Image (cartoon, rainbow, N blue to C red; front, side, top):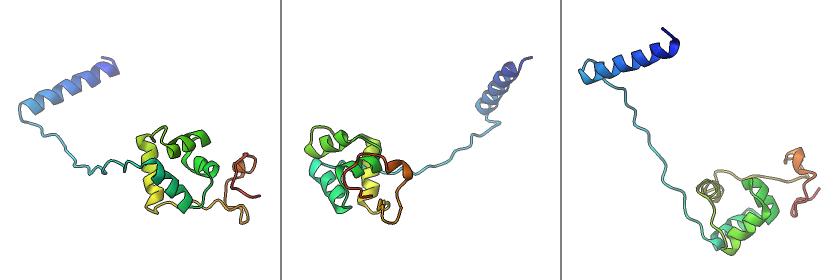
Length: 120
């Protein structure tokens, strides 16, 4: 009997054992976080300005384009749920990136990026 056939047979046997109440299934409760805050355009701009980031630097932090940040801040587009979660993490102070080049704290790959707000 092939390995696949054995796995199928074992699975079917487990189903029969469960149905015959000879086996109980393991369960685990998982606490899920609340959905991210729905930030409005002005709130996104306030988060960026509170961190003293240019739109370019903020785009790098969030791994989006500068145009995306601009469209969020102007209200043309809304951030995705994953972007909203990142904005929430930054807003609540769980993550405060320091991109100062004077101390060499930003990754080398950013040195060659044409980003306003990063002095080299």
